[in-house]
Image (cartoon, rainbow, N blue to C red; front, side):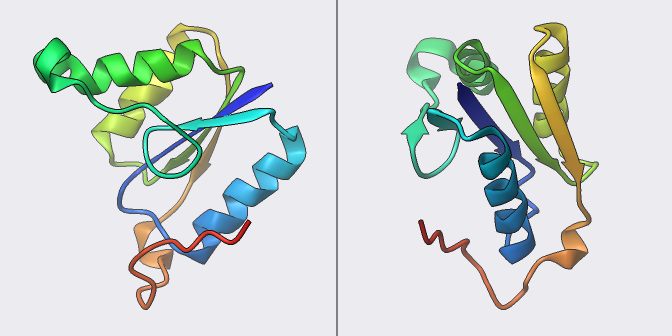
Amino acid sequence: MNLTVFGSRSLYGKEVQQHIIQVIGKYIPDMILTAGDPLKVHFLNYKKNGQGAPDQRSKAILRETDQVLFIYDGHSKGTKHEIDLATKLKIQHEIILMDPDINDHNQTELQWKW
């Protein structure tokens, strides 16, 4: 089972990390796909796809996944577009709506401890 994690850039910190770890424990995926750091990374290809590069990357990731976790701030156009794509492609997904004000402002980068 492949799990994808997408999220709004305005969200970070320990609470986000806890949600991701909880969903990983729930599904116990064989692979985790993401548009950001660790694990399997899909990079943007502006040379090939021009301004459509972010959309093409999202579609490539979604074609490989069985379940998606969205961590959404309720405002990000990119994350909303990815939610709409997952819905259109009939991919199972969960949405965790979070307020950016909950961020741990002392933590500028999410530190993963696996």
